[in-house]
Image (cartoon, rainbow, N blue to C red; front, side):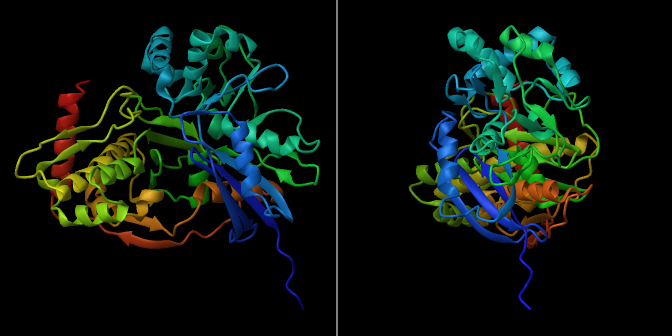
Length: 472
């Protein structure tokens, strides 16, 4: 007898750099086929470019016989729409720091960082949508006057999928992405209209927040569309995290996050209290600088990433005393939007390409080690670091990471975990069960931390340089 036909679901990862789509077996999570297409570079982009990328990535029948789809998207971006649903201006992305002063002003106007943490679960940084709304109100008042709705990148793309037929009824989102706006409470699971008004001078329309496995709509062809989520929540959902796991993501940006069953409010404002795609919570620290630190260091040294690995591995732990603060594009955590990179401890003796390469790897990771330490400080267990993202493939990163994190470092097989998380959500929505399907995640290596205190010495020098160059 022929095998019974399997049910297919699709997950979309609409990231800063590209759209990636994976089509999976709804029962097992096995990837059947995939597609991708690039996005324009820059920190602002017209949302139509995301639709162009989606249509290119799904060309040639990629979505044929797909029963359900969901979108994971870059968080925080501001898509401002007028009363007819047209885009008012290019979307400002999460990594657009022109709203740095707006973040400072809003923080002061509400009564300081602690008040934002109390109200929303997170201290404001320029990435958050609410700061971009304020920037729009101050710098483009004519555009601001046209704004009827503000949606997030994944909300916009979900709507476009539904608009291709008659399936669009209203803009929708999920708790995970709504929690990154700066006008949503992760404790009460509700929008905060007074914070919208603080930003724009009036309340604006926002997407309806759906439950994690609630149907957002159906396409003309009958494909079920899930609520989707933000990229980090999608990755966490795709990884199926266990208690004690903390993810360190090394992509364009860096992130540290864990799945928690309760809100985690950080009085220091370093860890954002986001919601997860599983219905729980996702305490998260994000950085602007991650894999691109390595790319920049390789360019500076006149080599490629493989060459950077070889150089870094030829240097001793600690890079001979060289320390890099890797804030090449400003920084979100710590909140230093106007910072630049700083190389400290340079002497004639340690001025070698090998040490500079090693310092780039150690500096990039040290900024994320601080996030793991903050997760532990807030009472969450840290038993294993799960290392994902493009830079997790670096041999030098794999050699350095266990000593700096001080716990085993598990490296999943390479995969599109944001897309897989979105596909898993699509399967959950399609099945209608109380719990999401269990999909196996395979690991290619688990690296144990070395004995000795070289890692501690690196982190101590990093902290000392940070305190000198950017005193709090």
